[in-house]
Length: 145
Length: 407
Image (cartoon, rainbow over all chains, first blue to last red; front, side):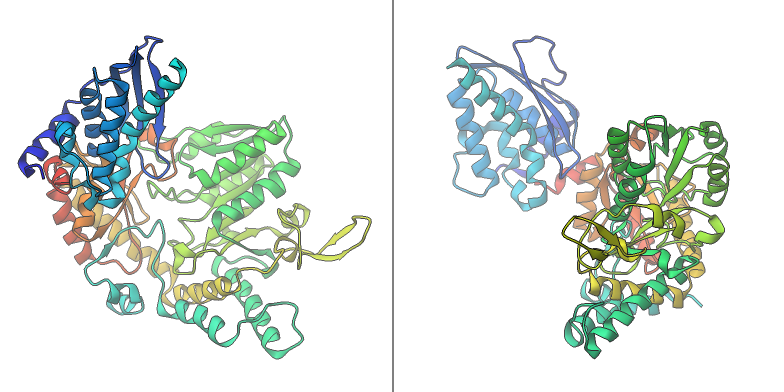
């Protein structure tokens, strides 16, 4: 488990100073609007994949601490990773939220959510942006084939 | 004499959840034992269908079901119990008017006039009417604080308006609309007035003859009754010329192989299929319970509670209150710098139930300039002591505490 104070610092930092916030007009980015019907988060995510590498990720919208921090963290975490690595990291993250065995090593700051499962009704906040990113990466793989 | 301690003893939810502060009655209310007993009595002692059995039990339950119609008539002071249609709830009642009256009588030249404060249930059915008939929807502008201004309504009225559809009490801001004045003006242009009473009927005395509104929709579950049951009131002549939304058993008098249908008269032509019998019997008990207490007393107590909570919230530097002049037991606010849902999750850890979100009124939130808010809504069983405990917790909320919930 990650230290509580460190988790607090990471969550507050990413919520108050979200990374990669603001969408790009560049048409090589794929965009997805994630509006949850069960909560009030409303987030758009963008992913740019080139030659099997996740080159850039961006997001914007309104959301709670958990949705903003998790999306912000993943835009940093996945940048520069190969599509395969990125999808594997997302799977590790889902496993963590589901209380399954996972490898915390490569999740870096995303480990701040290692006790999110305690607030079961908020897990969807922790996945709204990440699921959008995942979908965009999978789409780009399909299109490149 | 309004004795809140005695009232709380009527509601088993309080005995079974001693720590809970329930400030979400605008979503649904708790049920008193009398209502629970009425539903149980149907299940344990008289589970039979209505309007069709040749045996005592069915005859008796049918009578009680029809007595419920009379109780509902009395509750809202309708002229006749034939003007009371039992539905699945306020949403279903509003859809019935939109379909049965709006889609039947509106044309492309007509206008449906509503406001920016409406709940989805009272605007989406009219979007559909507009789509089908070509009628246009126009909105009465609100004051900057989201409240209703009769002068702005007068300006928005014109001879093209055929339907004025408004919630008497906004589920977000709690302001009470002057329905009597609205109906008078609307009628002078020949428009009918549809009133969404989901938030008003449980909280303030309703008199449809005095206000002279044409349709009124409300739900049982927000006024101490069961869920799955509600009422559409309509002036008889309007109900008579309206289409039924559903056809089926119980709503027709005759039909033949050529497809001719002779429907029953209102309200029966709208109640096809076996209705929510236990719900209607429970709603009857709920309305009797509220009438015993007196709706004037419920209304006065609501006002006392909301004024007390508003005044306390206004004193807190970390709170932005959006409806300081609410009259109807609803306070909508935000903790500065904290997302509404995070604050609500924090309050949950203190056993306080509130609602966060846009409260199904997605247009209104543009008006008040907040995409999400926290809503604390109270009812006859809430107390000043609960408000004090609530305010003490709210005063302490900050971003750091909210994040702490997840660590």
